[in-house]
Image (tube, rainbow, N blue to C red; front, top):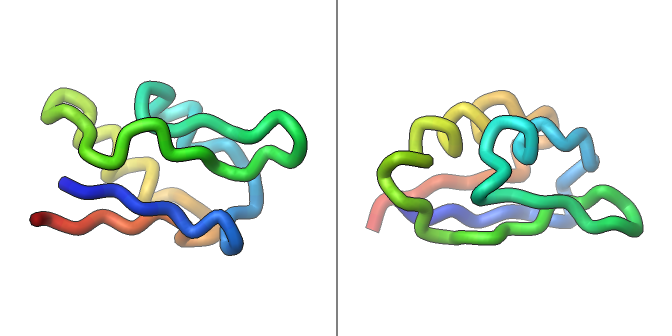
Length: 65
């Protein structure tokens, strides 16, 4: 799984950070998503899928190599 984020689309809701804190973080200045790992380990992938599913801005994209 490869994860990309669209920081321009992000609204800073922080749901991704709550669900998958090992993969996502937020900028201190404005809350915009920061991607910590673009290839999460298998044990985190279900959480990453859930984060992408509930993102209100659809700012998280998942692809398979």
